[in-house]
Length: 437
Ligand code: LLP
Image (cartoon, rainbow, N blue to C red; front, side):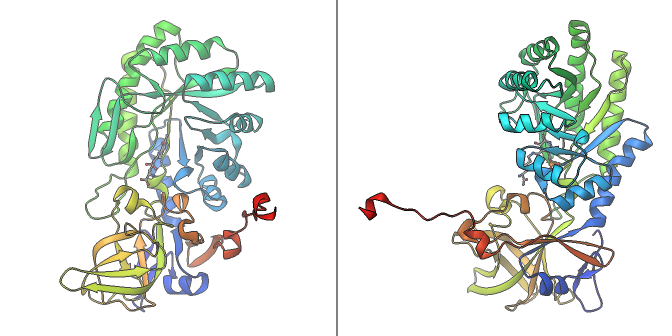
């Protein structure tokens, strides 16, 4: 899908570039991003709002994959940006992303992080809890700044793939509960303090969601409350942010909707609600992460050792693993793969793809059909663009892979491969007083 295809040499090609050339030039493991696919997704979300003439911000949730290059692409596509730490904020600012379109999330932002956000006058801080109201208020006073904020509410809707749960309350570390008076108390506090400009409310119901039901239920619950708050506080929000969570297709079991389908349903729901409440259309904000970058990313690995347990299983080991993709071991996440240099060779048997980390649980895929593999073959694992690099780590002191962007037949390195020197870059020798005495 996207701009991937099989070229005349029988090789996997992404964005008009042969993956074998990429592997030769940049080494493996290598994350390859199809930039055209990212742009198309971004346009899918944005144009659905534009067509309906609804004021909106589509904020890329950069936790899915944050780097200077991807943030520049987000900027080019007119997206806003969701950051969740000083590190993600710093990356956004380093990429030259306009501060006015950055939204800062998190359930325990530090003083330094909040100060950094205020000093750069970012577009919005999503306030999560009472401690943060206090902390942000005191920093605003110190800096003589006013913070534009959303209050994060927990609507008691939890959606995951095809399942969604609605409860009177939700057991979550995030946000103010919608059903026990917490939000009212928070609204009361922030309207009293002149440190804040309350823009509206935020909720996020989950991730990898394939249906619109959860979004509709969450919007329903929030708008029911808006009716009460209109009379209680004479407050009508300018912004309703319904979070991210739009699903993608990792394997054939997954059946995601097109971006515009989610957006159209959200718009329809909100439009019905405002007519009921006799209020103006708020701006609608959403925060897709995975659906913008997930299936645009492919990881290329080199095949190494194999182990066969007769009648049971064949293990095929590659030069990466849970250090560059922790999702299979952390969430039992499923992926599809192919031999990028043998795309036209018929599938022989099922093999299981093992990582190289010293841990039995370091398995990327169980029982995937592949052609007979040799050491040196190139394995492509698909849909690794979200929460892959961003959750990568140096377990076993394995250097992080490089990242390349491909588009229109050209490739560009956007994150360099870590070196062995990088591995010891922050290490210091220990001068033991005990040993020297
Ligand atoms: N907004 C908020 C407030 C969020 O917490 C998240 C994700 C998003 C937006 C973006 O969600 P997305 O569109 O990417 O589903 N590491 C996990 C996913 C964690 C998601 C955390 N929050 C994984 O690899 O599946």
